[in-house]
View 1: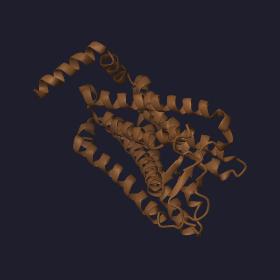
View 2 (view 1 turned 180 degrees about the vertical axis):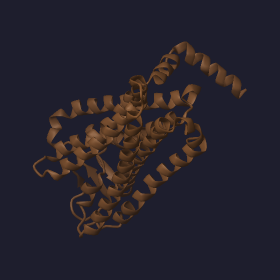
View 3 (view 1 turned 90 degrees about the horizontal axis):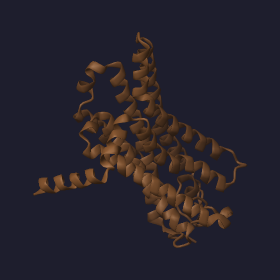
View 4 (view 1 turned 30 degrees about the vertical axis):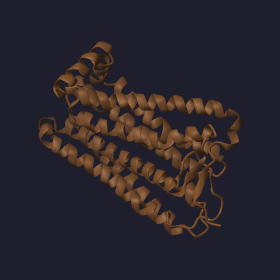
Length: 317
């Protein structure tokens, strides 16, 4: 019997902790939403942050925001038993959106590594190489690659017959979990999805490795300790973000390979990648960045916000 909707089961083994899970994910959602919206606001209004590095950070925050919005609101509704159902089309759209945003993030992290490479290795040519036209081209490429590559495998998978169980043993429409519900051989689909995933993960990863190899070689050649410290501080925040992305992706992959892990535990492992990363990224860039701290002090002041609002209204008039 073919069906037209799925049911998101989420944490079926932790039903007695549903209220705690709901509160935990609600707090996570609010922190992530607030932190990323603040970064979008700071970069937009503070002229000191109108540089390539912060332009890429703005894009990263937007992607993190989209990832969070794509997953957590529906999960909260499921935990409240308000609406566990999701339509066939809605499920595949969520699946496509999550994978596309994730792929775009990995490509953007590689683009940010290139930005740091030029800033440290070729500082005198930085403004020529990384101008606003180049930034826009890189950002457009990142978004297009992320959203187009995913389209192939998800569109093809949407034509599969689903006639087994319609219960998704996850907290969102995750590709391997949903594909496992089909009643036909999915070897070709799985191979295509795996190949595209390796492409999106490893090509940016190799580019990041190359960029940091050149950065390290360049920094080691600097004569003074102060110069080396300054150079490393210029890329420390980005390096932490790189480690966060790729370590969480590696843990996710290893977790799914270990058969003894329960599906509730797999969801928590997946959460490292899908839930914590969007929250931690803005914290890394704000806590370790003086310009972001200054922007926060300036624009989180109620009087300053009021003055900024008045100036904006006057410009509109």
